[in-house]
Image 1 (spheres, rainbow, N blue to C red):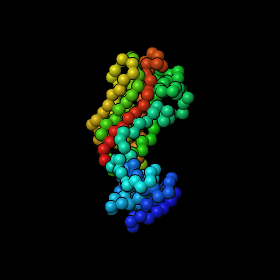
Image 2: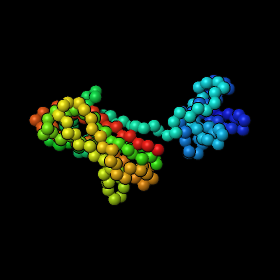
Image 3: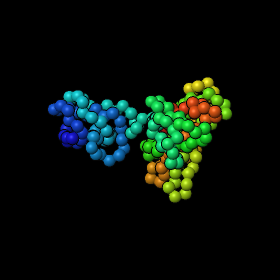
Length: 202
C-alpha cells in the first residue's frame, strides 16, 4: 500500500511501478480510504497498473449487477444430510419429501433489486422447485421480496420474477436471504438446483 501526492491530489493504493497514476475500476461516494484516490473532486477506487495514466472510471456502481448465488452456497434449514452437492447442482440424497435450503445475500446498500432468477432442472410436473428472496427485519420477521416457482418439465431451464417488493436495499436496518425448496416426486433426480441470479440498479 502506498500514498503519493501529485498536483495537490492525494492518491492511496498499490504502487506497482514508480510514478504510476491510478486507473480506478469503479466509482465510490464513500470517504477516501485504502485503494481510493481523489481527482477533480471525484473519489475513485482502483489500482495503479500503468505509468502516467489518468483515472478512468469503468462503472458508477461499487459492485456491478448482477450477483450470482451458486448451488453450493446454500445450507439446509434443518439438521440433515439428506442432500448431495455435485459440481453444478444440489439434489436430494434419498428423501422424496420437501427440503429447504438458504443462503445470505450481500447487496450494496441503496441499490434497487429488479429481477430474481432461478436456474435448475425439473422434469416432473408433480415435483416442487422454488426460490424466495426475503428481507429480514432482525426483530419483526421476514418480508417476501420475490418468489419464483419452476413450472417447466423440460430439463434444465430458468424462470424469473421482476416484480420485486421492498426492492430498495437498506443494510442499516435489514438483512437479506434466499430460500430454495426442492421436493422431488418419484425420483431424486426430478429436481436439481443450479443457482440464483439477482439483478439490481443503482
